[in-house]
Structure formats: C-alpha cells, structure tokens
Image (cartoon, rainbow, N blue to C red; front, side):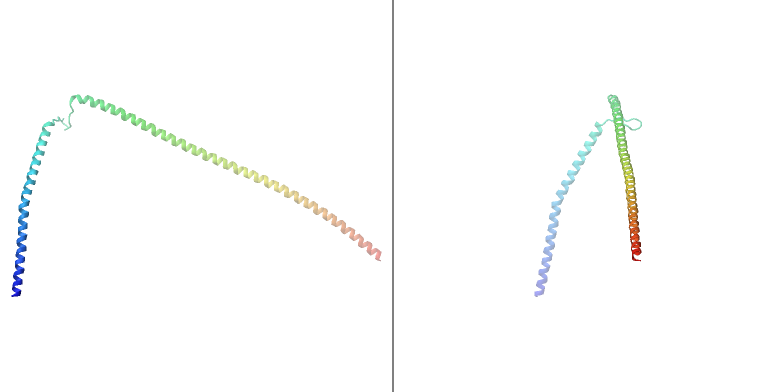
Length: 187
C-alpha cells in the first residue's frame, strides 16, 4: 500500500502542477487581452491622425506643373531666380579665375624653384670642376717641382760622384807612383 499511496501522492502533485499551469495561462490571457486592445486602439488613432495630416498637407500644397512635369514657380520669383542665377554665375566665374590664377602662380613658383635648384646644381658642378682643375694644376706644378728637385739632386750626385772618382783616381795614381818609387828604391 505504501507504493499505492506514493503513486497517488505523485498523481496529485502532477494534477496540482497542471492546474497551477492552467491558472497561470488563464491569468496571462486575461491580463494580455486588455493590453492588446489598448495597443490596437492607440495604433488606429495614430493612423487616423497621420491620415488627416496627409490630407491637410495635400490640400495646402498647390503646385502648378508644366508639360515636362516640373514645378512652375510663381511669377514674382522668376525674376529673382534669374538674378540669383546671374549673380551665381558671376561668382562661379570669379572663383574659376582665381583658381586658374592660383594654379598659374603655383606652377610659376614651382618652375622658379626648379630653376633655382638647377642653378645651384650648375654652380656646384662649376665649383667642383674648378676645384678639380686647381688640383690638377697644383699636382702638375708639384710634379714639375719634384722633377726639378730630383734632377738637381741627380746632377749634384753625378757631380759629387765625378769629383769622388777624380779624387780616387788621383789617389790611385799617387799610390801607384809611390809603389813604383818603392820598387825602384828597393831594386
């Protein structure tokens, strides 16, 4: 029996749970219907107001169109629009002229800058060429001076060698004379 009682208790719990779920759904439905009804009424009122505003705007707007389906302005504004167009055209022309002058000035400045850079480059090349020429002439002068100094030293050495040879020859001649004198005396 114990099992039967437990089964009955479980059944009663399930039935109680189902009953509470049903009651919850019932409460939600009865609470949701008035809210839904209020929303529908609000949307219908807003739609009606928007429709009335559109009708009023259509009534207020009276635009005359030509055959090309373009709006024709009122007569007083045609002259004003022509004057505005003329004034606008003058301003556009002025701006275009100023832009063209500015572009020309920028081009001229750029060309001046390029010419200045080219002038500086040419001056640097001329200075470098002049420096190379000065170095070559100094080098040639130093080479010539070196040749002259070397020639003088060679000439002096040759002269000294000739003098030394002459002195040596003189001594040899004196020694030979002394040898002959000694040989002649010893005989």
